[in-house]
Image (tube, rainbow, N blue to C red; front, side, top):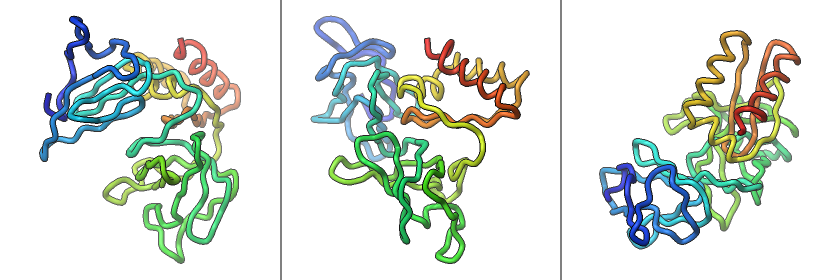
Length: 230
């Protein structure tokens, strides 16, 4: 099947793998042929090898229009992937870059100029403990992931330092569900009718909530970690 298309059916021992089916490590989740006009973007638990997309761990297959495919995987530690967005905590500051904890096996690097409009003389002054919403631009197991707080055309687009509010941890499974599952989006929109709040979800299992009062923040956190996590 051509990259960029969905993956509705793949043979498996006489059965067929479909979106929302469970797959095991080594199973072929989809066929994928190289194409100059389509882009195949693989998330957690999938890799492209020998013209096929195979699972690297057990999970539930999900696909999305545009060529996105990933596994819903219950893991304790985040595995960085290019073009995913994460919430990171600055743990070291240097002249040319910040070292950021993204809850992955290795820390990430965020160049000081990787912000909208940043120059050598005008750039954000982050400190140890600052929370940033960033995009992964490089994720290679041989070196530290590289982050950016601008999109591909140089705009912030919601990325950057987050101030105020409250950040907490959740599973990577829940964070991906909050960003992709229609029921989760509907529940948050419904809650927004009675409580004013901002929320940013990182695919690395970190969530930032900024509400008017601490009590409202607790209500939102309980919803996310309770009913929506089920």
